[in-house]
Structure formats: C-alpha cells, structure tokens
Length: 552
Image (cartoon, rainbow, N blue to C red):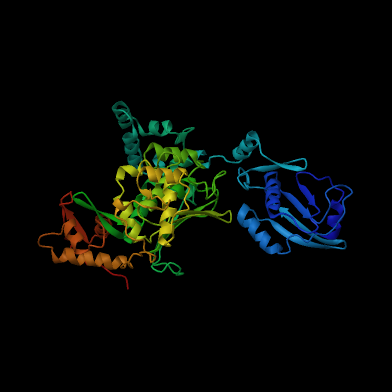
C-alpha cells in the first residue's frame, strides 16, 4: 500500500472490512489478535494503526509493534492465517497495516475460546445461527458424490466379502444377521448409501474399488509408507506406494508396519504372555483410518506414513475439519467425509464417532509413553505422531492397574495421569495438583493415585511403580527385513525333514512377536520360497525347493 492509497482510505467509512486505531504509543497484543480474528471471520480486511478512527481521520503515527516481523509470525502461527504486516512511511508518522485474509470456507477463526465479529465499535461473540451458517458453507461430502457409469463390477470381490462380513458381525440380532447374509450385494450397497442413482458413490470406490477404478476416479487416494532406520535420513530404507480399496489397504499397511513394530516388553497375563509393541496396533490403525477417512479428497496430495525406531507419523492432506483444533480433537466431533465414515462404522472398522482419539491417548498412557500429538501444519496437512520411547519405571505401575479400571477413566483422567508421569520423571514434588479437578478426583477414586496428609500426590504403592527413569527406553535397532526372511528361510530349510512350527520360529527369534513372524512367513510363501502343511498354528512349514534371492 502506498501513501496515496492510504490517504484515499482516510475518508472511508469504518466497516467490517476496515479498522483504524490511533495507537500512538502502543496497542494491546490481545486486542490485536481479537480484531484480526473478527476481520477474518467477516471475510477479511485491513487493520490500520497510526490513524485516528473518527472522520475526519488524521495520520498521527504509531510506535506499536516495532518488532513487526515477529508479530506477523505469531499471528500466522496462532490463527493459521497468512496475515500480511507492513509499515508505511507517511509524512505524518509511521503507519502499521495488517492485511487480513478471509477465513477458509466453513471454518470460523477462534481466539481465546470465542468466535468474534464486530458490532459497531465493539467485538462480540458470533450468534449460534451465524456460526452454523459458516460451518455449513462449502462442506459438501465429496465421498457422497455419484460416479455415473460405474457399477458393482468395478468393485473388488474380496473387499465386498469383507464388507458384508463386517456388516453381519455388527448386526444386533440373528434375524438381521440372516437378512444381511442373504441380501444381494447391490441391495446391501444401496441400503448403506454406497450406491445411488444406479451408480457407485466415491465412498464405495474408496472403500471397495478395484485399483483401476480408484486410479480413474480418485487418483489421489494413495498412501505412501516409508521406513527409515535413522529418522532424519533423506533416503528411505524401504518404501511402498499403495492405491487400494481401504478395506484391503488397511491390512496391507499393517503388514508393512508390523516387522518394524518390535516388542518393548513381554507382560505376564495369567498363564500367558502378551508383548507390548512400541506402537500399539489399535493406535496405528486408528491413526491410519483417521487419515484416510477425514482427509480432504479435494487436496491433490497423498496420505504419508513415516516410520522410524522412535516414532510413527501419519500425515493427512487438508486441515482439521470445522472448528476442531489440536487442543480439542479429543473432545469435538465432525466428519468431513460422512458417507465414507458411516460405511466404515457399519462394517465395524472404526469406533463410534469420537472414540478413536480417546483410544490412542489411553494406549499411550497404559504403555507409559508420550501422548500422541495432532498438529495442523500451515493449513496444508494434519500430522499425527505416535512415540515409541517408554518410561520404564512408570510402565510397571500402569501394567498393574486392573484392566477393567481403564474402561471407567475419562480423557481428562488420562491426561492428568500423563502430566503426573512427566512431573515424576523430572523428580518434581507433586503437590500442586488441584485435588478437586475432575481428572485428579477420578484417579484418587480409582486408587491409581494417593494423597498423603501433606497433600503430596504419588502413585499408589500397591501398583509396584519403580522410580521413573529420566533416560527413557528406546527400542533396539531393527534388523534388515530381508535378513530376517533369510534367517527364517534358513531355519525352515535346516528342519525340512520334520517341518517348522510357528512356535519353533518364535523360540528361535524371540525378539519378534508371532504376528511379525507370520507376516514374514506370508511374504516368503508369496515369493514361492516355502509352503505350509496344516491349517492351524500347529501347521508346519517346509522349503519349496526354490532359493531365496537376496538383493545385491
């Protein structure tokens, strides 16, 4: 903006697009944030400091926000808007201009817990009706769009079978189960909204489609999975691009991840032993499902999964839907792709709305790990991170909590328990908790935490907690996947006269879980290296006569 352009605005009426403030010596940072949010909520505009707000306006100059570049960065970070900020060297003094873009369609800007708009000279909260109008705009469900000319013949038969089986298992009565079992597949898809106007919807193609139909109608419905032994290394150690029906792709992705999801500890449960994986399977599946279900399919990029020994990242194109933020994701619910989400719920692949993030938080707390993070990056994508390091001392206590107790704890209690773990890890004397807070109250009632006469809170001694260790556990480096397959193949070949059972391999490779060994066996079988005789875990594996070819 030039001096001439500024002068032309001095006689303009102050409205929802234009705000003037004298701010000769300073201006409140809190007020600036609030005015910027209100301007964005009303379609964008300009906030001008150094000019009186009543006609006839005068340029008086302003010394507010001399560190303008830093304030611009803070506004962009806080409001997730690309606010421009610049100075005009007017003959009468320094003028500061904030150029504010409009909020994204369907997404009001929140600051200090309020959605603000301007009313005369004041800022006021939006009315519920105004807020609803914003939330409703532009949020059409792209997965409900009909792909004319498509039919059931374009769907994968295995995916269709999985879908029907899931719907049957979710049925609440035997009559319903029998009805779904005998119902023609076209009718089942119509009843679940996946067929409309005699053609498939995008949700049907995403969930059940053959590779070629997905590529034709939704080419960005791709997931790229990468593993790096060293997290920040540029070159990946293994990569796979997948464009599959969601019901098939989920299992394929888990098979990719499983060999790198090594146990952090074996836990005695009754007469058996359970292995705790560095990334809980339930959390991994929820993170991937959230990415493919709630991503913005109008965005051209693919979902990306990045795995390393210390963390697992799932990056989903698009922003959080609606008013959801990283701070409220566990408390608020909004489905961007409603038809796709409902179809996955009907076949039992996702939890009831709003429970997925809760389960991820609970899994991290139970394994004494840092809580998963949910980050929106530059209005471009959402990143979910699961962390592998474990607080070994606190893990004993968490594994001693009765299983049924976890079902009664709220997210507030889980977060409180994680805060307690972090303070304990830093050797803090924990007496600053508000004993009346709901999360603390729950943990005291469930006897996970106890408070002494001095008000100091500690873990219940009955839970066998050791002193939390500052140096957090990190899983050992992972042996190359091809080497693992070679080890298994060599063991099967050495026992070819009697065959090799799964239990034999588990004893031989005690650092892997049974599921991980089974995934490697499945690959060796697909490669034609081995064959199975018998159908249960007692089945025996034999070499097929081919030699395993290692890459050069």
